[in-house]
Length: 252
Image (cartoon, rainbow, N blue to C red; front, side, top):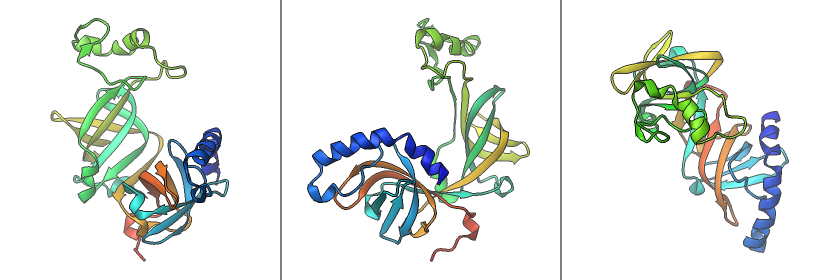
């Protein structure tokens, strides 16, 4: 429960504020439900069937969820590098090391029909999460190749970054088909490729669509709430974390 504790402790104040707001807006019979976290939070599945699921946080608060109130249900399954094929789509984001190389401690894999959850892409994000641009906003002119590297400095004075983010190296975000796994290389738009290097122990998860039938007691789950009714929490997205590979799972 330590993972749940860390995430929910940071939301304690928000929950208190949300609780008073809920008490004002919701009818009396709905006020018995705990308030939803404002930007998503972790929970643990304590009950699930095909129609309903109950999630509990580290404070013991329980959130009933109706299957019809979830817009998107995703599952992360642990997998291994040697399970990837040329048909696998890989998504990674991490510090840009130059020459289309990034380092990261996690990648997501998409197979089969779930490949349409992402699109092949390659984008470079500056320390304040702004992408590299074709037009320099400070000098008001089109940039050339020599200017791209200086955009980090440009954004530092023209559009200052927040405290704690200045000096963080730019990041590279790529989604592409696997070309080889040692080293891990994926295709990029423009007939190019990116190299993904581990920054330490790298975790790999396969992302699939799912539904309540896949949820089991004890599974970790991440919730993105958008509202609450007298009967259920309304969610834009649910991400269920499984402990075994998808090939070892059998629906009940």
